[in-house]
Length: 561
Image (cartoon, rainbow, N blue to C red; front, side, top):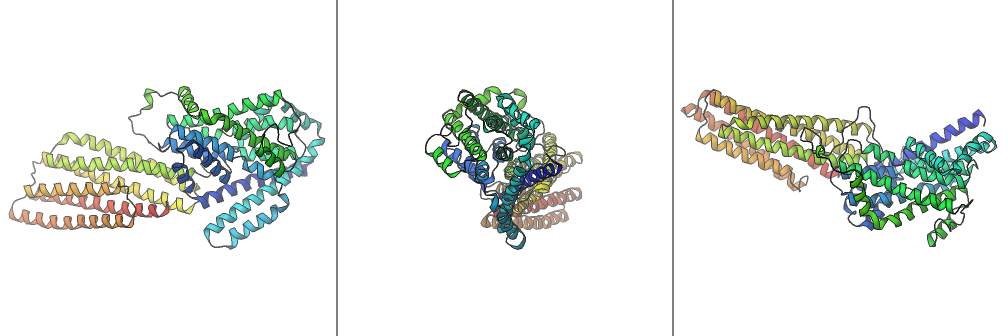
């Protein structure tokens, strides 16, 4: 193999991987959160779950992305472990589409496909068409890279050393390990299968050896989900175990099949994928090594799914047995309930990541809002009862709210840095504003609770009228926060109601301030009491302002989701 061939191989590999990334990014930008919504709604039935998992993975061409999405949903408590089983099975079927496309050998049309894509991406102003153009450009670049790799590797057929290495893959263990390691490194079974097809088309590796590498690639693709499960809940980790079990069981079955029935080729697909589907694929796909690998890859995942479909619930139970609950998993310290902690220097990308983050952020912000609601209620109560016993709990909860604000802000800045979907970027930007406003509500609640110490230490007493006004303040603040937690949050009518409530808070603040000045002038309230009450009114009004700010951002989120 000459240096020019080696450089051509590297260039082809670069174009192949970059084309796949372009397709994935374009699909993510075009799809937005719709993939997530489909997954959430159609996973109750096992057959629908498999179909949905297969369809979504066929579109995004990455079982890893779908599985990572599922891990995120299970971690957030939005999907059960049993539902995740069906999606994972479907994802393994859907990921075979890339291999089938490559086997169709449309390399001659690749420059045209890439040209059409670039025209749409560069010269069309409509964002949705630009995303479609990115998909086509990626597909064209992928096939151009594929052809370059095949051409560059053809001379390797004459290299005795390289052919010797490839012949070692006739040993099933070595072949499976090679496939596992390579796929784990590049974290894409679609890409690794495509590269294997390029090797086979070049005559570098025989079909009888390539099948074992192929089986290992199915196991290696699980590494992405394993990495995504680090720092997640016990159930999310079990999801990755199910993914591993599926591919390991399939590998054992098919390795035994190919050892017991050794063959040099299955061009007609009769042994691997019998029946109408096998006949159809062998009729459509060309009789090339790439076509043989595509049929085998499809067979592997469809047959494994059919075998394990009745046993899906048992796979979930087995995952629980392998990874049982631990008492220490119930962490009472400050922690993120739904979000996975961001690792320093990490970069998450790929379709579904932003969709997962959006859902997890919604749940974490809801939890944060409940804490703020609890503190607002407790702070008003402590002022009315002049009870300092609740102050320590209010302060502790306020620290928790501050912690959540910091962690949520970190997540949002991380997502925005790598987000390609404009709608998802707008949503997480609104979440950043919402988090800051919830934190400010917590600060004002903490201020309110702190007035209790001043009341007791300086022996300040509010008049009966002032106490009744404080009760009214508490009621309307809690009503406003409850509106933010409502299922109707985000609609136009709902925003009108919250705006009216905030205006009512402003009116109450103005009226109460005037009334208290009158009470001070009449001697009903002391000067110190008047100053303290004025500060309390300021915190009350600011809580109303932050409620409206949050409502406006939730309305923006509602438009994009």
